Amino acid sequence: MTAIQIKVPGGAPRQRKARPLFLEVLTRSLIILCTALAIVLSSIAVCDGHWLLADGGRMFGLWHFCTLEAVVEQTASPNCTTHLGVSGVAVGLGLCRSVVSLAVVGAIFGLELLVISQVSEGRDSGRRWSLGSALVLVAAVLSSGGVVVFVALLWQHASPLGFTLTFWCQFTAVFLLFLNGTAARHIHHMALRAPPGGRLGKC
Image (cartoon, rainbow, N blue to C red; front, side, top):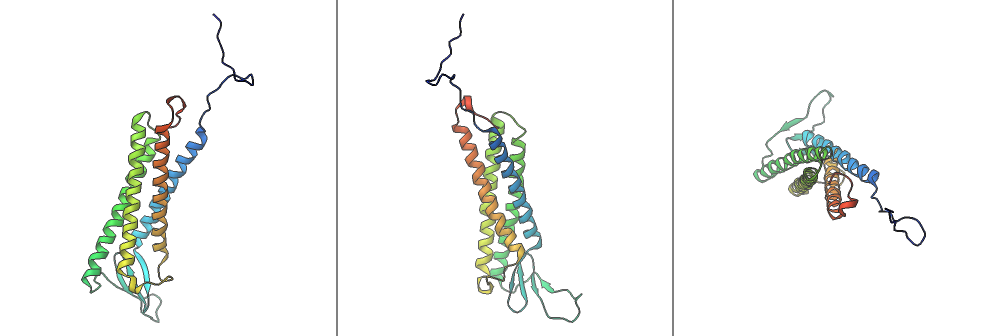
C-alpha cells in the first residue's frame, strides 16, 4: 500500500507549524523569577516599615513613629513609639500593614503554585498555574491598596524626596506583581486557545 503525501505548490510536504517551546519555557521562568524578586522586595519593605521621612526629623512607618533628634553621640537611637496620638491615622496604618502583610502571604502561595505547576502534567498543571497567577494579581491589588492608604493618610507630611528606599521597594514590588500576574494569566489563556495538536508547555 502506497502512502499518499500531500504537497504544497513548492513541492515540500505540508508541515504543522510548531510553537516555540523554548520561548514559552523562558517566559514562564522569567515570570516565576520576577515574582520571587517582588516578594523579596515587598518583604523587606514590610519588615523595615520606615516609609516616610518628614520635616522636623519625623519618620512615619508601618510599625513605628520615630523622632530623629540631633544628638552628639552617634550611638544614640531614635525615639520611636507605636502611638501617633491621632486615632484615625493609627487605625489607617493598622489597616495598611495588615493589607500589605496579607499581600506578601498571598504572593508566596501564588509563587508556590506557579512553581508546582511546572512539575505537574495535564489539567492539574493548568489549574495550578491559573490559580497561582490569580493569587499574584490579588497580592498586587492588596499591595497597591496598602501603598495608597499610606500615602493618603500621611499626604500632609509627604514630599517627593521624603519617601524612603523601602517605600520605593514596595512601590516596585506592586508593579512587578501586577505585570507578572497579568503575563501569567495571558499565557494561560493563550494555551487554552491553542489547537490540541499544537499545544506545548504545561497548560
